[in-house]
Length: 274
Image: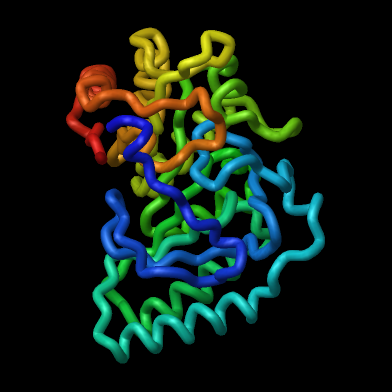
């Protein structure tokens, strides 16, 4: 893929529920966005993010006081599920994602329980998933909430602290990469439901790191091995990134990364998504 082929992403800042979205990794997915405020709210400011720079860069939900209430979220979810069920709409997943990091939501476990009840009522065969950047896995409340999820898709874009800070640009008080990896390994041990998601890109500016070199892939593979995920989803840029120096890599680079991860873990769990 060349840069001229990249697509634009529409921000989800006004929508609690959106979709169903045809996802290259999750199938037909109904999204739930609990960060309903103007501007992306996240613990990271990733250089490749399709939604642009993070306006509300925070390390804890306590830094914000305008969260949606739980009942409002659940009423909106039920409205959508009731309508989609009546229309015989196919769903493969109901996914917490949206306009920023979903694990920032202060009552995440309670909302998960509520959505699971609605899922069981309208779409009992559908998996409940979450797309997380993994940053708050060291918080016990977040860890316990993620234990309730059928499919945890967790970000791992770096194998070293230096690359982690350069690529994901975490908020000041976010845990170290090593602590995050250990938290993901603990969650995988407890649930056997963790899938990793690794975005690989090339930097056109030598002053800015990327994660596509053989050494970087080796370090990512070693971190992935310590987690032992169900799957590692390998992909590259398909939408306009936050920073102009970020470019997609060729498919053969993705294949090399997948092979390295598979060889390091000792099983074929890395898959390419294009």
